[in-house]
Amino acid sequence: MKKVLFTLIAMVVSMTSFAQLIANKTDNKITLGIDLFSDLQLKTSDNWDARGFNQGVGLGLTYNFPLGESTKHTVSIGAGMSSHNYFSYNRISNPYADTLVLSDSYRGNEKFKRAKVNPTYLEVPLELRFRIKDAVKIGVGFKIGIMVAAKTKYVGPDPTEGAVLTNDNGSIVHEKYCYINNLERYAYSATLRVGWRWVSAFAAYQISPVFAVGHNAPEIHPLSVGLTFAPF
Image 1 (spheres, rainbow, N blue to C red):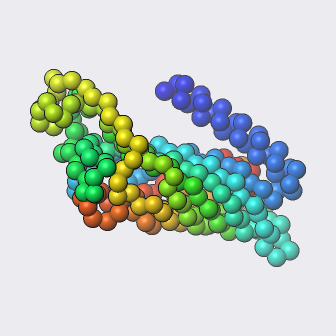
Image 2 (spheres, rainbow, N blue to C red; image 1 turned 45 degrees about the vertical axis):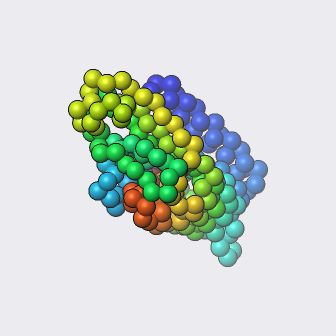
């Protein structure tokens, strides 16, 4: 955990230093930022026992067009990438099938370690950005993402050895699949940022579901909440 925290801090410091250099050389017309967030899994269906904390990361590069003669307010568009982790207490036993089969919840099983779905998106963000007294910054926008990778991981009791809630003494298996059927290819999200100088509170609500409707897939509409580090 300490290594992960140190890596994240190093990423933030290096990214913000590089972004500030770009901003100075381009007269603040280009913004480079990093989002560190957790996804709240909203509107989940009964067959999906979601975990509370779901860490994720995003990167973005945008070009800022001034609104009229003011350089404080801009319309910004660019490109980015985000990676999400949707943790649950359920195992997807057949991620390649047309109809997904989800296990009962492993919550409370001592052998259960983790289970997650991890999609990654290439994104096109569009934002209206406003500066108040130079230091306070507000951004309201929308982004469209296309899924470029997805995998699922499971570490827990071997499902072939017994019932979900009574298999405390069985062996532990490690499963990883690099494809999941029935994930929506496109993601549409509304975004909001409110910050001071180069640090902002960040929120994004994904309007489209993570999984396609039907086929026994869980219904997930994530709300991403976290921090953005960028000198926009």
